Length: 120
Image 1 (cartoon, one colour):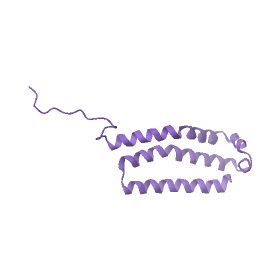
Image 2: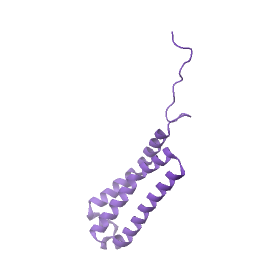
Image 3: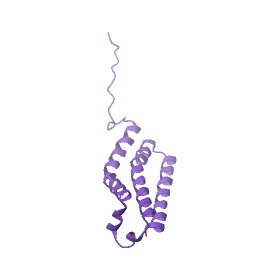
Image 4: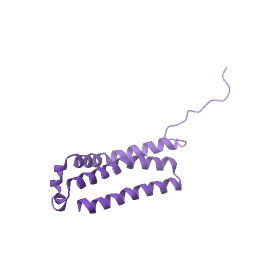
């Protein structure tokens, strides 16, 4: 017969002993659900330069290349955000949080610089 020790079924990601990788994936999926519409809008603005006239004012006077580059950088940042947050949740260490903070800071600085040069 079988041994006297029965194996307990392990719970999923929501149980007390869930895998950090699965927690990261779940949080990343939730973040992606929140940023899906802004990603779509940023890609739409980047691929249809005629949308530049929708904003009026100074944005309508910006160069087309600057306008497109600005929106592609915003789309890339928004697309990378769920992966970065999921990875941070999975690792949950000071080094990981520092790396993610540095990556987000670089993207933020790039968006500000591109916005000042080409858009505003």
